[in-house]
Image 1 (tube, rainbow, N blue to C red):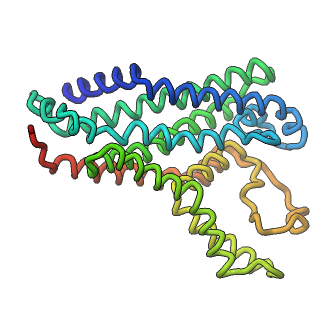
Image 2 (cartoon, rainbow, N blue to C red):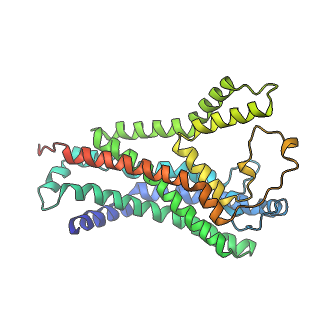
Image 3 (cartoon, one colour):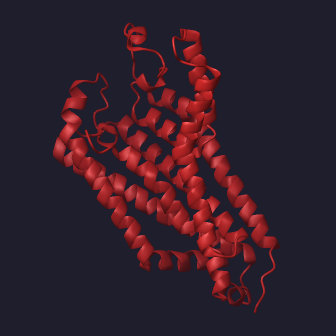
Length: 314
């Protein structure tokens, strides 16, 4: 345990003094403050047009005519943060010969990867929670509406989901860092997978759904089948699971739960009642478990491979 804490403190010190940490922190704060400016400009109109009483949460979900909401920015940057903290965790130590020198000390091999993993989670938690709390503080000052107890709990759970999602991408990048020898190859592989999940899975899902259940002059049953096929394929993507979970959590009006394929006339007589916190957690629990499971699987594989790897001193 002492060796893990030693590696943990060393990695935290390296992260906080590194240029990549400052660059990431600056980018996240710039985009976050930009999104809160857009949200403040449009939050009054959004609040008046909505029957949802949770006005404070609209700071994170309200978008403008040009710029998207804070949720979109966060879903874009969290994978980047996780990849940056994981892609060179092991192979950079190998290439610089520091790993063999480190293992010559009275430090267990698993302490190295565990300490790096915990340090990455801590740093990522600080970045994500700090920008969310800053936005909440600015919104409280500007709009003058304090958050309710339920809104505070939703924001805390929102931070936890963001950290879990970032942990998955850090675990995936760390896996490539263990398996691949070159840092350039590991970051390119991680970024390629992120681009595929973030951009292309929804396109593929829509194409397959439209091919299996065409929407042209389709009945309601065909529209529902089209939606279910696309939803099943989209849920293979961690990015979609993350966006689905935080959308349900922060937009509890229930309007996003209806089928996008159904026309306005079909839902005009439906009453949209906001989900309570318990109901929202029931809705997002499978997505959260899936993200956590993916993170555990990636880290477990990287852990086993790293423990069995041959580390040469030359």
